Amino acid sequence: MAQHVDVVVIGAGAAGLFCGIETAKRGRSVLVIDHANKAGKKILMSGGGRCNFTNMDVTPAHFLSQNPHFVRSALSRYTQWDFIGLVASHGIDYHEKELGQLFCDHSAKDIQQMLLTELAQADGQLSLDTHIQAIAYENQKYQLQTSVGLVTSGSLVVATGGLSIPTMGASDFGFKIAKQFGHSVLNYRASLVPFTWNNADKSTWSALSGLSVDVQVSAVNGETFGLPLLITHRGLSGPAMLQISNYWQPGEHLIVNWLPTLDVAEKVAEDRHHSGKKQLKTWLGQYLPARLAEHFCQWLALNKTLAELSKGDVAILSEALNCWTFKPGGTEGYRTAEVTLGGVDTQHISSKTMMSQLQPQLFFVGEVLDVTGWLGGYNFQWAWSSGWAAGQVC
Image (cartoon, rainbow, N blue to C red; front, side, top):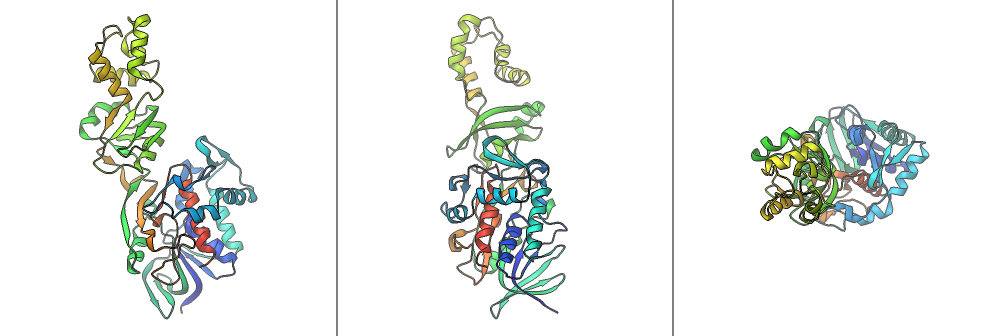
C-alpha cells in the first residue's frame, strides 16, 4: 500500500534534515529518505569529528557560483546567528577557532542529535536504508518507487549533496533527478581537496612529508589565501591548498610564497653585511623548518654562505621562496574532497524558495546546487540557509 505525505526530502544530510525540520514545523507531513544506515554521516566526520557548523563572518563573497547573487536571499533570511541561537538553545557547547570558525566542544554528534531531535519534535519522519528506484510525476503528485514500497507526495526536495567522499554513499543521484525534470547540471569536480605531486616534484618533495608552514598561495585568476600548508607524501594539503582548490582549474599552476612576510632578496642584501659568513641553510632556518631550509639549499644547489651568493643566486633563491610555481599532478579527487564544486544550474531555481521554475513543487537545497562555500563552516551554513528557505514553502 502506498504511503502519501505532503513532502518527501531525498537526503538526510545537513540540508535535507534542516529542510525537513522547517517543513514539519509548518504542520506539513514530511518524510526524509536516505539510502545510508545513519543520518548526517558527513556531519559526524566533519571538522575532525567536531563539526565546523558555521562561521562568524558569512557573506556572499565566501561562495562560488555561476550566479554569484543566488546565495544572497537565503543567507540573509536565515543567518549564522540564527543557527548559533539554535545550537545554544540545545545547550551545545562550542568554541571559535581562527577565522571565525565555530566547532562543537565535544562532538559532531551534538549537531546530528540536535537535528534528529528537532525533526522528531516537529513530527517529521525519517526513513533510512531506503533506496529509490524511480521517480515519476503524475496527477500533480510525485511517485517514488522505493525499497520499502511506493511513496507519493505533493512536493519533492532534492538534498542529495554532491560526489565528495563516496565511501559515505555520495553519488550523482541528485544530478540525475535534475536532468530528468529539465534542469541543466554545470560541470562539476572535487574541491576543497588536497593536490597531488606531478612526477618531477614527487621525488624531490615527498621526503618532507609532515612539515607544515604558513604560506601565501595564489591561483592563476589572482585569488590569494594566506594559510597553513601541509606537505604530504602524496602532494600538498592543509587549509591553504584546500581553500585555493576552489579557484584552480586542471592544468593550471599555483604560486606559493613560502615566506609571505619576507622579501627574500631585500633581506639577504640587508643581512649579508653583518652575517656574511652565515651558511644560507642556517640563515633560512630562522624563517623555515630546518628540513625545509636544507631542502631548498640542496634543491637549488646553494650550499653557500650569504656573502658567497651572487646576484643570480639571490634571484633564484628569491623566486623559489617568494614565487614558487607549483603545477599539481591533479587532486586527491572525490575520495577526500570536502565538497563538489558545480552542480545544478541555479538559473531556473528561485533564490528565495529554492523551487524549480521548470517543474511544480520541486526543490533543490544544499550542495547539489551550483553553490560552493569556502573552507571554514560556509558549506554547512549554506545547507542551513537553503534548507530553511525551502522549508518555508514546500
